[in-house]
View 1 (cartoon, one colour):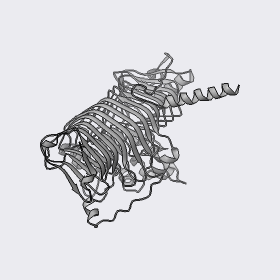
View 2: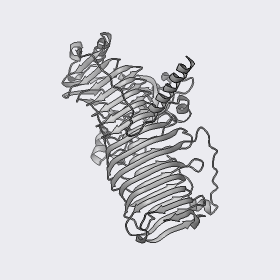
View 3: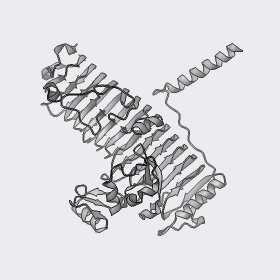
View 4: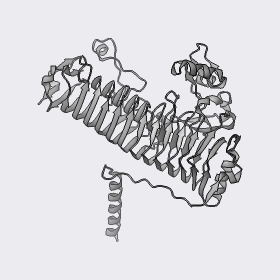
Length: 548
């Protein structure tokens, strides 16, 4: 009997280990919801598609009736349906017909202030146009449009509009700041903007404490909290007041053929933010966003670390991202960690950054086991590949440190120290960027164990590696336009391996800077195309570089 018990334990341990050992040949499995075929048409419950009648009660009554009878499909038929907040229920597929528009009202009084979450903190928010909490087996499907009336909520700067657009915005109402540079929908919105920590639900506070800034508390268009078996398929979600899609603490989440459209100048106009979710599939979808496109989060600072829920076991494939701040993004609120994420066969067009990993001191959290391949990019504003631990922060220049003008105080490593490690990125093509690769860690916690391979990057500058350790660049073609810059800039980094680096004729191949530079190897690279092979500055020595 004892032997049988140990055999059972061993099998269980092996099963767990195998389940967690994901790879391209062993991807996570995401389970989809299933529904009864019973269909409930919202017009049978009083909804009127005239674009004037407020259908909030009729739509929610239909959903409630459907779930009471064991679930099924709630049909939004062809037509323009004006509504306030819609609350989803378990076992319901909200099906938006291809010829249907769900138009959320711009009347902010229809959205009560509720307890929610914003950028990783507990926060007071106006109720989301579509929401669901503690649900199982839910979906929004169909080829129709869901519009959040976000332009009535968002403030905007004058320099982000044409002259005609600005005049139209001002004429619509609202208020303009004293300097004439920014439009706000209302005085309450402007007051919230100027209030420190506006919306944060701190101990002892209730939602009633935020009535005077309610218009500032912009909701995300769709918020799903602690839901299981979720499907979003075929639908267009657009014009969100803040983030478009926000999934928090969800399990088994699938997006297929979803279309997200936010204006390029939409404040906080993220496409989708997947926060502390497990088992996620985002495929065949398109994101045109005013902020990050496809974004992974897991809580912010101490709140996120206390929650302790990473986003994990995630697949992103066959997606397109336009204009966003980042095509695929991790952070910056990643204090619960992120792991076992697989991104492949995506296209990024005109995004600020292609692959964007961002964090800062104080966040904590471990980002690891990230695998990316087969990404095509065009017209990237800044970097194609970007990993940075100084989000909204700026380290001192090495020249100032070396000259003694600045004293660097390196904090001790703690639970608030973030980590990026074990990240693998391959087969990347980028036609046009400010810079091909940028990696910057912290002195107390280098970015480490990063493998970049098989890339063609056409950019003004090549690559920068700062406070990095055990980084490999292999089969990288850097088609750089600025020959006055080094092809690869290294600062206070070690255990770097550059294999088969291809580049055009240039002045300097390697710029190695800082006394911490060590064990840098250059192999299988034609050094004759550079006037100078390497330069050593700010305490770096020739012994740091090995050439083969």
